[in-house]
Image (cartoon, helix red, strand yellow):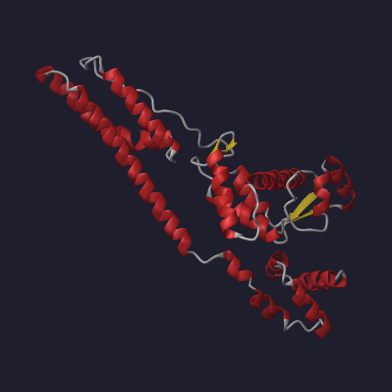
Length: 300
């Protein structure tokens, strides 16, 4: 028996995209998409945030595919000649004659003819960001160029160093970070080894190996500390969702003289939907806000 179809609303969709953005790093997402561990973490985090949802990993993956399809459809439509974009309402604003062509090119666009796509910016960050565009391609650190006096067994220690470097890169540090931060520190011990080799011979393999590994581990710990500090700063920032509280919508609605008491009462029902609250608060033009409210009330 097929699994029951998941019932998604805007709050669930926004929550999923926010969680994916939080996990959008090389630990959980590679060049070919999310890893198995990434999907597991995203699914578990989502169900913890929305305990009434009980969505499976497959249902989460299907919704991700659906949202990505919607994003690409709107993104491509924006590129068409004669098509505009309202950044406040997150809606396509094409010339009337263009709509038929847009829908013919991609049927997904039809649903956004009279409906905003509030997740467009977040999805753009998710799918057009540094990982999606290939800015973070991870490769192993090249082997260290040893001095001519170095002992031949040093090759094995260099391979060990590359293995550790690759492991750390997978945990969130690019090879460019390691090369940029560690190169100056490696130069000093290598230059010292070259000078001393003329008097005392090459440094022992074990000592050189431990020195190079220590440099890599130190760089990695610095990187993780900076990541943690950045996360703490982000958590201290006020959440944007606080702006769209029902109380703020009611405070903006009550002074509107062009609406009757009955219309205002119906408008309050609209504010049950998070997306409606976002549209209402984000619309700064009072005439446009009033027109939108009356249109929504007339459809109730």
